[in-house]
Length: 177
Image (cartoon, rainbow, N blue to C red; front, side):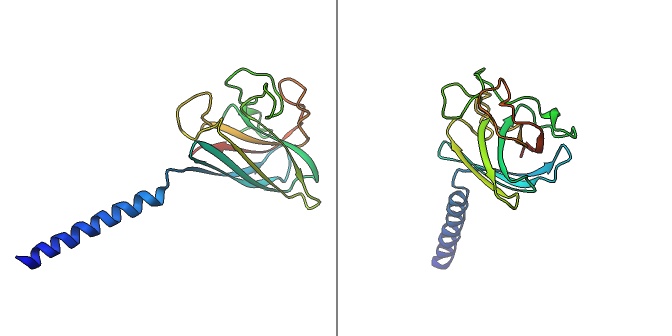
């Protein structure tokens, strides 16, 4: 009888231990990994990773094949990169109906990430963090799922409405799980 009780107790501890390990492994974060594809005849490619943790979403994007210099990057309305020029992704994601601008300004689209610089080899890494986005939360003013990530050929001027005059869309990915 004692051996059976000890066996059951050991089995119970093992099951509890496994459940505890799996809940710690998830750490309540959400992730979406993307592969950006070339558009508008460019050779731009890359990866992007969105991670939501503790109410903030971070973006890390690594790109190659860019022309050296400054480029704009935005989240667009649709998760559709089917057009050769990525026009199928629609305009900038702007669920709060604000003017286009710098992220740090009061007036900016939720998709106005900003500019980044590609080095002389055409490589760039973009990092960005905000509590104004979420991944799959269902809030249409914050949820980035179902949108498109677009890299532009030129810098965003932060003035021209509603696009920032950033030129052709040289890379695109749907933000989907």
